[in-house]
Image (cartoon, rainbow, N blue to C red; front, side, top):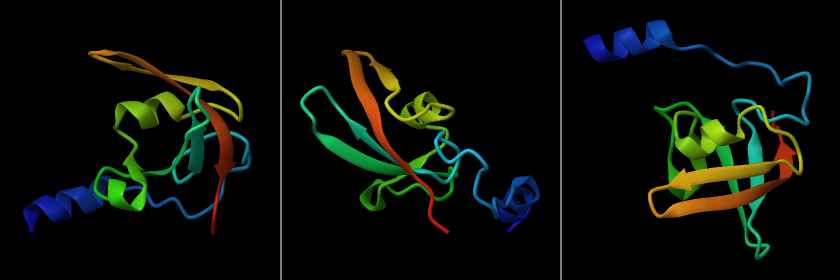
Length: 96
C-alpha cells in the first residue's frame, strides 16, 4: 500500500492531446518501418502500464526514449550490444 501511495504522488495525468500532433509525445501511437518495410506499431505509456502484447511500450525503454520528440519520417537508431537497428517513423497518431 505504501508503494502505491508513493506512486500516486508521483503520477501526472495526461488528459489532453498535444498541440503538435506531428511530433511524438507520451501517449502517441507510432508506426515504425525498417529497411525491409516491416512495420510495428507501439503506444508510449508510463512504466506501470507497459505491455508489449498490447503494443504498449514504456516511456523509459530505449526505443521509446529514441522516439520521443521525433517527427514523421525521422530516423530512429536503436543501439544494442549486437549492433544497431534503424527504423523510420511512418505514422504518428493520437486517440482520445
